Length: 136
Image (cartoon, rainbow, N blue to C red; front, side):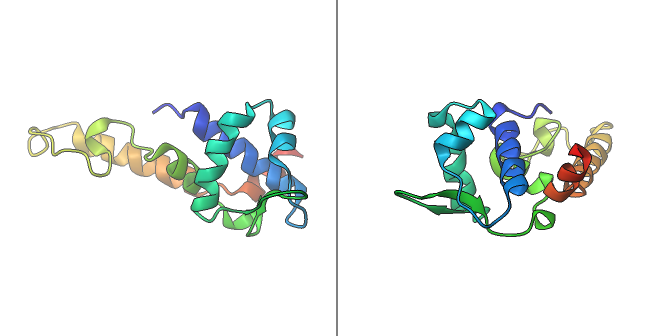
C-alpha cells in the first residue's frame, strides 16, 4: 500500500487545523503557503474534506476552513480512507473489487486479509490529537 500525495496532504492539513484550534477559519491561501501545497491541488482536497463533513467552510472575505470536531474525534484511518478510497494492501481485498477466481482456493488470501485488518486497526487507533502529542 502506498498512500498518495492526496492522502498525505489531507492528513497534513488536518493536523494544521488541529494545531490552530476550532475558533478561527484559516484561508486556503494561508494553508497552501504554510504547507507548501499548490493552492489548486489543495482546493480539490478541501472539497473532499468539506463534503464529507470533516471541516467547516466559509466562503468570501474572512472565510476559510476549520475543524468542526475536536482533534480526538478524527482518526488517521478515517482521513486516509476518505482521500485514498481504501487502505487495502492488495487489489483482491479492496472493498467492491471483482471476486477473484482463486479466492476459494487461495492460500495467501487469509494473510492479506489479516494484514488489511492490522493496517486498518493501526490507522484507526491514531487520532489528530495523538499526532499533536507526538509533535511536542
